[in-house]
Length: 117
Length: 116
Image (cartoon, rainbow over all chains, first blue to last red):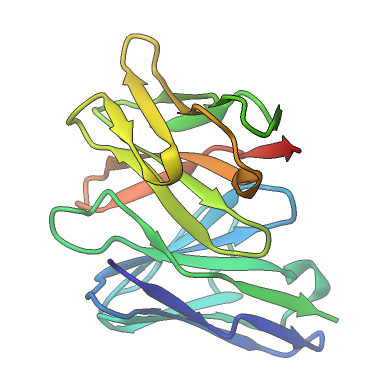
């Protein structure tokens, strides 16, 4: 089945530094990937839609200059949290539809837990 | 516009008893509906999905869900709960956008607690 990986699984950083999170589709090509943030005991909130070869589409209230998204290839999207602050600490999850005929299905990465000190 | 309401934030059952996790949706078009499970500190795993085929959908680990258009519901059930079923469950609705992609909308989640 379709597999999505994320790296790193956990990261701890100092306030003010930038953190890059990678999302890869391992056995399929993904022209679209989604990035979510999940706070403890809460649901997933869609942050942005990553589109291969074009600019990402951000949800209302998400700062595009703070959460930089690059979808450089059909198997890789990166989310960079710039100048991270403690309130950015969260569980970040990506997903991707596996391809034609299954666009409505999302396969999720295992998530990246970010802790900003 | 689409939305999902999971009616219970917590459901507590005893091992071996039936499970019912409720989900109601709102969608402008014929939606695709999903249930995902998330174990602590883990990613999401697809349990089952409805995409306009049979209204009774069977998933993994003995779970099933029935799509009822008249009630705009997609409740998740399992005849007999197991301790390993304890997790967070998310109901998700997805409909196509003008750009051709499908953007999912998540319910708030239901925490399933299973007592020995």
